[in-house]
Length: 88
Image 1 (cartoon, rainbow, N blue to C red):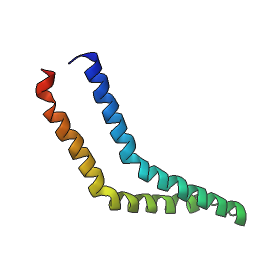
Image 2 (cartoon, rainbow, N blue to C red; image 1 turned 180 degrees about the vertical axis):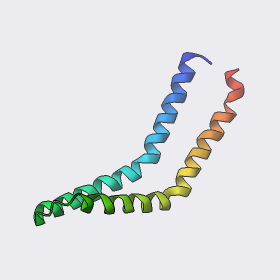
Image 3 (cartoon, helix red, strand yellow; image 1 turned 90 degrees about the horizontal axis):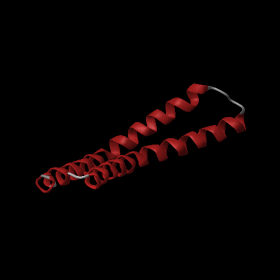
Image 4 (tube, rainbow, N blue to C red; image 1 turned 180 degrees about the horizontal axis):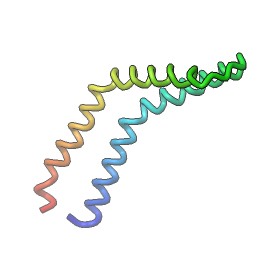
């Protein structure tokens, strides 16, 4: 394997990590922003008010998307293993 092949593998793995993590991060961002706006409007500054709903919705999002995430990782791993003979 040459340097270009290694760089391509790292690029693909990084891209997969970003694609898999993006939905959970977007949910966290939206929920955090909504709760922060609500806290600013009501002047309630309780830290757990922001933490608990965010964790719950991130967990629900991850559970809903888990089959898709697993399929993405399996597809990447299959392609990686199928590419092994061409690197030798």
